[in-house]
Length: 451
Image 1 (cartoon, rainbow, N blue to C red):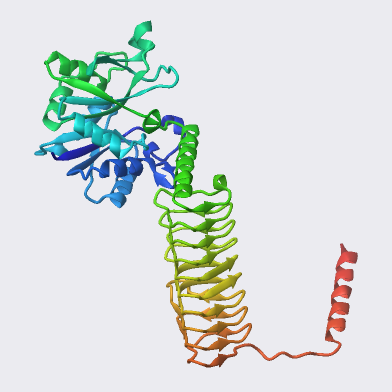
Image 2: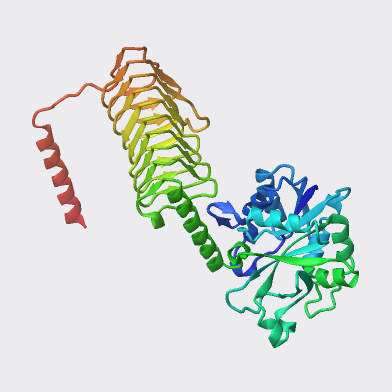
């Protein structure tokens, strides 16, 4: 059966106290909305519709970056969850199949749970998702069941004391045939204190028509909603804890797990060692057997087997490290390929460059890649020795087995096997230091006296 996703992402999120739409706040450096999209995406939906409102342009940009085929439906006025889903009607015109309604601020739903909802749809017309709440809270509606039949959903403020004691509570997620869903939504009333249209009415409406409704259960952690900065911090901490535990299970050594921060797409192979205080930004893959030393920051990069990075290293987008590469302390690599066995060990910047196998880049080396308007590439061959404090003014090429003298400024290509020396000749002038100091001290004394 075909599946469509409708993800509600129109809320402003007043309690976030932010100009950024709530669903774009990141967990593991990935917008909450994208987490929800990826969970639903595991079902290979035929269509995905994001219902946006506040900051719709920003939401649309984030959605397109994740899935160019997803459609945006704008909810101009926020008049309740049923009204929000109704905005997806035009985007789902002609669609035949099941709709799953998700929430952009509920990022941790398990794809396996969504699959169970679809399985339940074989026996029921409407499937809601619930969970057993650990502590009674007034924010959640109670799912009133009769066996496996969902009779209705009662909001806490409208519930009896007996109903309030029920632990099985509503998450808001549901699955229903597309045509039936919009038919039921058309019957939803706004005769309530808020004057809004809510999906919670669907169960009672389905029962009134003799249809079969049910609710399946998931773990409460999957339904975690984010409404404030405190919620966001707690959600990120929860994600990090689970992601770290998964890495440990997979054979990755985390020397101090609580100090390692991962992105949602971080990939690390087994037998890799991660030292304390390492941050992984988006788009990082580290192969098996690598070592990432303390206080390093990686994003948009690839680290191959046996490589050692850090401590205090920064790998920026486009950094490609081959096997057994060494990148040491206070080294920054950006948009550069470092071939097998090459070393960049100390206090260097390598940007827009290619470094050949087994080459050694001395301390303080800089690839001068930017001329103020455009970026240019530096190419360094194999077995090259770049002396300390060398500046390579791109575009420039250094041939295989070449060498640069310490302090050299390279402004033209160096042929293979050549030694490049480009620095002024040193002159020692006897007595000049003493004379210069005397002159400066006399000048300072005159200035102090005048003051």
